[in-house]
Length: 305
Image (cartoon, rainbow, N blue to C red; front, side):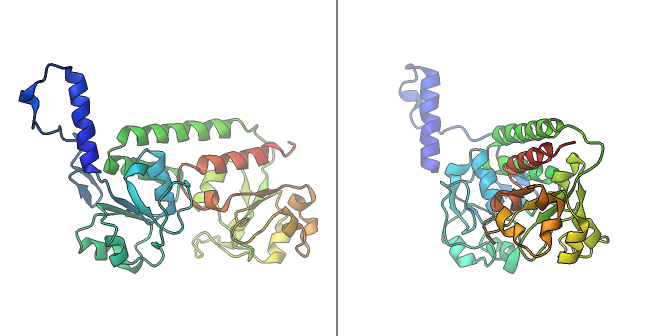
């Protein structure tokens, strides 16, 4: 890859210089990338990485969205998007340092430091960027900027962040205000685990002025914002909207929800306000959060004021 990059720079220099360079230009080294060395957190790269391994689906989406896809040589088994990502049997949940090192990476991106993989790779002199799950949308923007800096795509990452900010703001402003807030239940799996307002998901839905029925199940945050609701409490809460983030993993749908015992009396069920989401989009904090926000906005806008 570096040979290709050097050749490209050399060709560009010849074109800019016209035909008058002559022999005196032969053997002159290509100009170095002025954006390197670069430091992000504890990671310092002296040159642009051309062999990136992503062990985090969200990071994979971010890398391809900022134009660093050609630099990615391997992604983990959960990185399902974009389709062209070089998916492998590498695991972010059970990372294997030897297998990762076998890909000869000059940068590895992880979202969790499981098995102390960062230290293991550090001993092999392999740079590792930890990009943990976002708590608010600004965390997503920051990670996109960090990846842009480390991969030599600062302009592209800045443009992506601006585009996301603009689109989300436009989507939120496009939903008419309501005199009475709607309530909602956000389902993570069919065992009724949900996400409160203090989670990343909750922060995305907050601008719509919605009331999260899961908040009552984790008032002190002792469940880290992801409580399991009881069927009785959920039915009693009577949410106006139900968002299903388990359509792929657990094959849940409006039809399966309507078959649940006692749920026929819930307003969201009676009024057909069950919104099926894409699990992958709903569980990641990358560029496609815009699609999630849009899905929520469409659902809210369809409810009569």
